[in-house]
Length: 312
Ligand SMILES: Nc1ncnc2c1ncn2[C@@H]1O[C@H](COP(=O)(O)OP(=O)(O)OP(=O)(O)O)[C@@H](O)[C@H]1O
Ligand SMILES: [Mg+2]
View 1 (tube, rainbow, N blue to C red):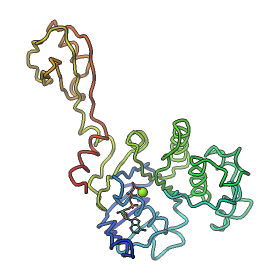
View 2 (view 1 turned 45 degrees about the horizontal axis):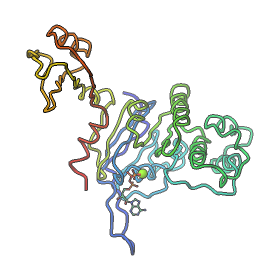
View 3 (view 1 turned 30 degrees about the vertical axis):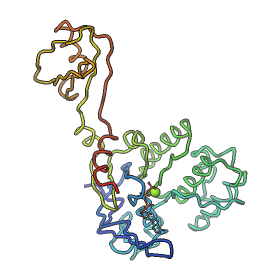
View 4 (view 1 turned 60 degrees about the vertical axis):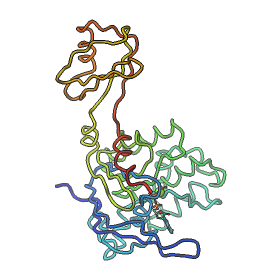
């Protein structure tokens, strides 16, 4: 078995009540193990508890109960070692507006006790695409640039585990791709374990080998992305034919159905028969096609199916 990057046991968090809010149970007994070397995705609807979990890892929020082991170090028993192993990019922007990116990285390196000659600010700024903004005040950076500066800060002490809370939220398409490339690079070349939350299911599908879906403070799904998607290999072709009532004889691998508007729906399991073969069956039945639309289940379907029944 691979070494665990992260091991969480029976983790609970209840936020205390204050004058505006009643007590809130944000995490209700989380058990989670993330093997070292993976890119791991944490998904879930708004308020599911993702940031609470991440902020506990970062030491920004105090847990109510449970154990958190980071890179083999118990967060309570070995706070220094466990903190050194992890770098967290929070969801909330917490930058000093009067620091430049270069200065912000210097301060962060100082906090981790990294001597001046062992710092690698330039390399990190380059990695997040902020080299040309190295000496600009944080308050003059755009929202996407500030998020990248948060990422840069998380990288300063070269942590084995990098935790990113919505790293690409509000970041434009080109930069999102750059961040994806850089995350992959850190993972492949440095072996960094990456744990990220995202609302972009496409991002989770593309980047994450394994996933957990969190809902109401509990983990409701934990699986490899591949297996999750394999459970959903049902695809459909919706076909407009030139005849009104196409005669499609039953086939063992294809279910057929006719919609009210006369279009033919052919559903099949993509691991057992290809779209090309389904179309070939149509040709053999002398059904001519005017238009074809494909419908495919994706991570969004798993997500909606798993979380919708319980939404509040
Ligand atoms: N400081 C706090 N005090 C009280 N309640 C809080 C606090 N922070 C979060 N909560 C509550 O805890 C629950 C989980 O919030 P959390 O921020 O962890 O969700 P999330 O999964 O990160 O959501 P999002 O996708 O919107 O970022 C929510 O009901 C939220 O209102
Ligand atoms: Mg959050």
